[in-house]
Amino acid sequence: MATHAYLRVSTAQQAQSGAGLDAQEDACRRAAGTLAGVYKDEGVSGKTGLDKRPALLEAIAELGKGDVLIVAKRDRLGRDPLAVAMIESAVKRKGARIASAAGEGSDGDSPTDILMRRMVDAFAEYERLVIGARTKSALQAKKARNERVGSIPYGHRLDDDGKTLIADNDERAIIAEVIQLQAEGLSLRAIAARLESAGHRPRGNGWHPQTVKNILAAA
Image (tube, rainbow, N blue to C red; front, side):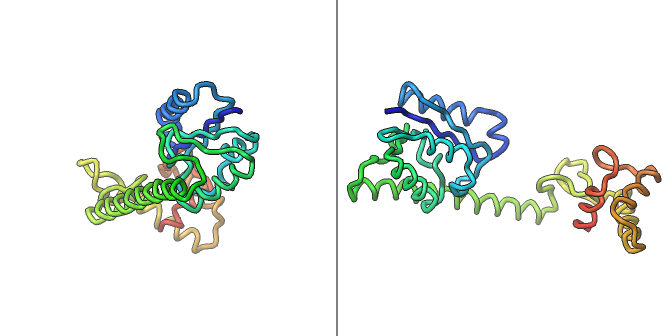
């Protein structure tokens, strides 16, 4: 019998920091001791299906009869009960089982065991929905205050308070020129070349067709 650890973090920032992954691996090692393999899905949402989790697919493929797939907590499997049920089914077909280092729910097959696991999974989904609602509300509030949400759109800059978006007149003039050049029939590449030769200030490394396309899409 071998134990394989599956780790998952939802954001690219968590993946780059390594903190979330390291903590999960430590928890799995404390609970299981020796691990036959460690599989990491980085920047993968809890509602993402099995087919879009390459590390989890690899982990399941490596499972043999009697093996264990361990996670730090059940919500690392996912925060969508349907997705988690599909993962459990795939593991069971391999003759293996899932264990949680946090000890959430038994891996037995009795009605009570199954009910307890479903309750844990439902609560994980509830947490995801609450977090999503709070995030959406916070973003809407920031937009209402005209504060920056994400990257600064072309044609804007931050006010002195470091939060409020205000118009950047120089970039607004470039946007107007881009729209006019497109109306004259110039291609994206030709517009980029025209802006470059005119000495207009770009964001990043020079003017490119994709840069022009992004400006037109946001205009």
